[in-house]
Image (cartoon, rainbow, N blue to C red):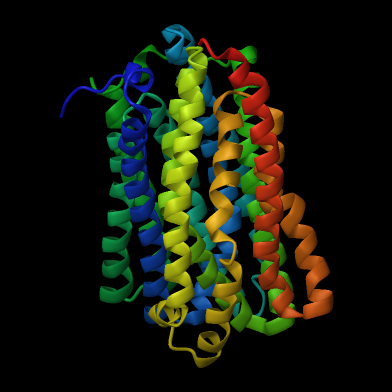
Length: 451
């Protein structure tokens, strides 16, 4: 493999560079999404449809804690990309060391109370009735592995910030493949049920962390763990926090959304509606993988060139990323509008779920062709270190617009109102993001045409 340098982010053609960054990110996200998708299919077919709902209850809690790692990773990686672009390797190393310390401190401090108050947390997130017991089994075991997952999510973003997307892809492939193999062995062969599903997930996080540690200890990385400063430095922590808060807030909103949706849908349609939402949620993770890949590939390119003062390349990266992501979003839209029934049958043969899920899926993905502007626009402000607009734009879809809509629309349309809240929120968020992105480009990037 040819040696890849972070300096390539400032030299290679934007289109070629975006593909080079986005394809490995997309493959990694695809495999991770397939892992979640197939894991859900295994659980639904080998354990039962209620087990799908049980995992859906656990995800927002475990992913929120793990998202601390992602938040610290993305916040710190924005600093690292700009530091490498400005030839300030010392700051990059210090930031990396502080990321490791913060991730460990915060995740462990949240896992402990998460285990203590398990019997209160699960019902609060919709784990009621027949869902409670399998959700509790899965929750306790998976929470043991959450610090490992958080370190993986943090390390993965740093690898990408170095301009090493292939290694970031490998870091996503290893736990995904490992989880599926362990699912088959522990659930299908040994018949361990929810215990098998949970231990397969936790073990896969450990495999991922082992690979990431190898990367940073090897000659492949510019940021050596042995050279990092693990002692927290307040200016670095504050900058990581301000930028990482954007990602953490997004995941917090996602977790709140799961909590609200599980409870609202349980009250409207019982376990069947919660299961339908779980299936639709898996498709949201899976179907958007190429668009998220473009977004992940875009982040280090925009951050590096902004740090280097090359605003022409920043503008070009925005335009190119939106074009690529919009084209892929259109293909995703067509696929989901045509095949929702077949997709649902992969998960379950439960007739009630088969009746409810396909129309819900069509409503949820109605605005998919336009979401590229919203995702790239929010990512841009995070990449260049502008935390407040990044925070606001990131929270638009699932926080500022979506949460009020799932309370208002069901008053008039019942359960249908819950599903149509998705495209309405997407449309409103895209309009607002397009305005702020256009304003930013006009005022701050076009005003520096010579750079």
